[in-house]
Amino acid sequence: MQRYIMRRALQGVVTLFAVTLFIFFFGRLIGNPLDLMLPDDATPEEFQHATEALGLDKPIHQQLYMFYVAALRGDLGRSVRYNRPVTQIFMERFPNTLRLAPVSMAIAFALAIPLGVLAAFFRGRLPDRLATLGAVLGMAIPHFWLGIVLIYLFAVTWDLLPPSGMGGPSHYVLPAATIGTGYAAGLMRLLRSSMLEVMGSDYVRTARSKGLKNSTVLLRHTMRNAVIPVFTLAGVLLAHAIAGALVTETVFAWPGVGRLTYEAVINRDYPLLQGVVMIAAIFVLVINLGVDVLYAYIDPRIRYT
Amino acid sequence: MVTGHERPVSRHTLRNLPWVPMLIMGAVVFLAIFAPWVVPHDPEAQSLPDRRMPPFWVESGSFRHVLGTDSLGRDILSRMFYGARITALVAAGALMLGGGIGLTLGILAGYLGGKVDALVMRAVDATMSFPTILFALVMAVALGPGLLTIIVALVVIVWASYARIMRADVLSVRHRDHVIAATAIGCSHFRIMVVHILPMVLNTFLVVLSLNAGQLILTEATLSFLGAGVPPDTPTWGAMVADGRRYVATAWWISVVPGIAITLVVLALNLFGDWLRDRLDPRLRGR
Image (cartoon, rainbow over all chains, first blue to last red; front, side):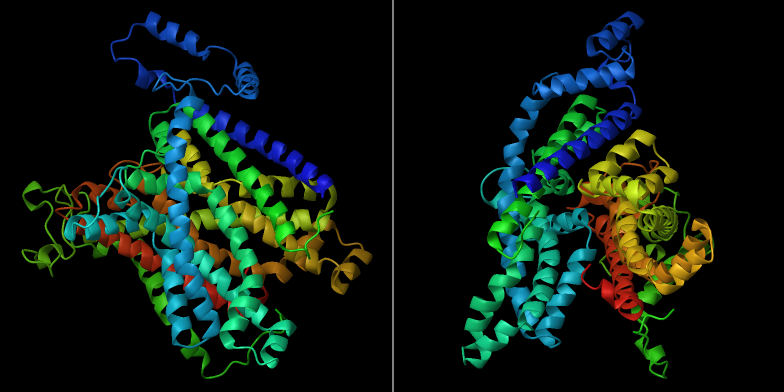
């Protein structure tokens, strides 16, 4: 087990290196951030001075080296746009994204678990068809559009909920529902097929032949095992919370990391983009590893070597 | 191809085809090709007096602009037809390029094994362990606006899943008797890969290709919604939804109508992919 974790961690470092390299070089292609930073009438001297201040005049491999050395010390540079340390801006925005994630996941589970169980139980009959249709639809609807439609219906037409921004509990409903329904479709499909697999197994037949009630078999015997892959997927989805929130946070003007990433790209803010994407990558790698390790604890049949 | 799952051809075959998805896909392809001849209006023609006109079924709407007009008075239906052209072009380009790269690398990795395999799979892991939309966004903005940019950005994120699945499929056929026989009579590696392995994995490839197409179009729409990659004023469905965002309180149709088109097309592709998988390669269920 320890060897497995070590190997995975090492692989993670290699992946992280590849990701930062990719971001670094493509980030440079976006364009010169000074064009946006300096006023239009800036003199060549001012331009030169700003270039040197940001280290943009050094050869690219030297810039990369400086980036890595600083990153190891926890310094991801300063945002060009905000002129503040990237880590500081990130840490301000990150809690907002994290706040949204559990609400979205709760909505996703509240939809996916009952629907998945019902669909598996009534396999091939009307409830199954309706639930599956819902899931298929949920996978086809673009998030950004769903967000706009929800704003139109609940904020504009019926005036029930605030259209955007962050505030009281009512501000969470629409963005969380937008993210949550997207999660729910995948989770429900997975739960359904995993339930069907478990329902065909020997011990479920044994439980049934003992004369246990349908509900007992379903909830105590089948669900418990069927839900393992669903939790794995939920973990993976949470790991992608930063990227997943990108579109939703942009639509709902939610001051989180997703919107920050979008702004960084639009403003050609290299250091900010590099920093955010790097932290997002570490986040994904650590959670993926965590989920796999947790998996082995939940399910004693799984052993890594 | 012998898969052992083929059903006998009967008079029911025609009825079992997924007609609705095929009709939607056919319509998109038709519009993509014939857009300039079937549009009721010039998609670029602005007319400020006619701006934000509702679709015909809404009060004060008219049949002159069946689906209404946007904030600059451009006809939404005409722009949607041209949007179909871009969607089809980008999806076809990205699928062919990304699929081709994934298929080639997957076969190479699965057949040659060893270092090539390790290298390809590491690259696959690196690509897949990372949120794809961030990749695509960074690339789309970095390469500058253009259709080719979107295609390249999409290729970078889709090739990996093809490579992984094709590699697994190649591993399952590379020790078949006919491959061993071909090796024994001295066929070159190239010949074995192309003549003896490729046809065995083609079914899986087609299924995976069609299952991914919907997701690809969603990603393309998301990118153009965020304004990355498409030249300004290009009528893409995603950009049209973005356009209408500001007018959602007064002119909902500008955003809603193109979104329905995206949903329908993605839905059609997903359903068609499911059907093709059940037909050609049921082993892929759940993958």
